[in-house]
Length: 263
Image (cartoon, rainbow, N blue to C red; front, side, top):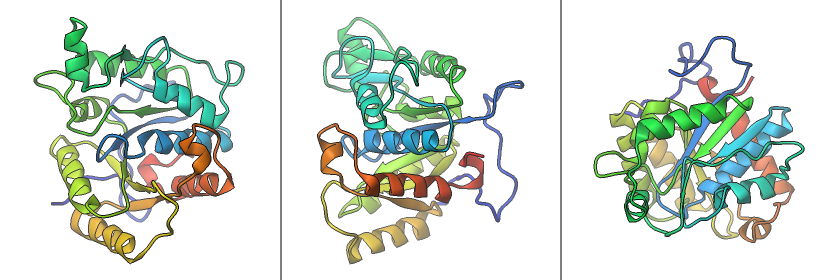
């Protein structure tokens, strides 16, 4: 399988996102998905938002669908804002997308609420939020094939948006299979992929298994593993992580392919 991806600097000119609008201020939009639930999407979203803001971009997070939440702001977005030190003064707390209380798949949570999610409507809501910031980093729910309804998945939402997708993955055993399945689902829908990021869930340093996983994913899919976010006990508590995390976050921006890299 050859994964459709954003070209790197030595390749051809980067494509333009399908929803780009003339006159919009410089910036962009990314989407974060994962190879599974609880794999590190929120940590990766926080890393990208924080690194962008460190470069002077007015970046904000957005969650199209949140399950297991309540209130106006999605729990994952509240965590990202806390981790990145965002306040009403330096970053408007815009309403999140659809929020459902049950902690389950979005299609079932919506059905239990007597509603049905629609990828087109979720995409319109995300684009509306996009107009309020230089950069938006949208975090998906679950994985690429998490169902929105009986017909559409989170990958269909990504395809409608056309924003470069960052894939959060575990660095350890099983990640080759999970990552390849995720990339294949995105490739089938023509979704542009920025790359894969390993998110450590424990404090171990990269070992031979992780290095081989990285090599295998890149060789078998043609998609780069752009880096690794280290485990942070503070982040696990929902607090602001230390310098090592932010150094890794900034390195991700430098490693991003040309079509996904901020100016």
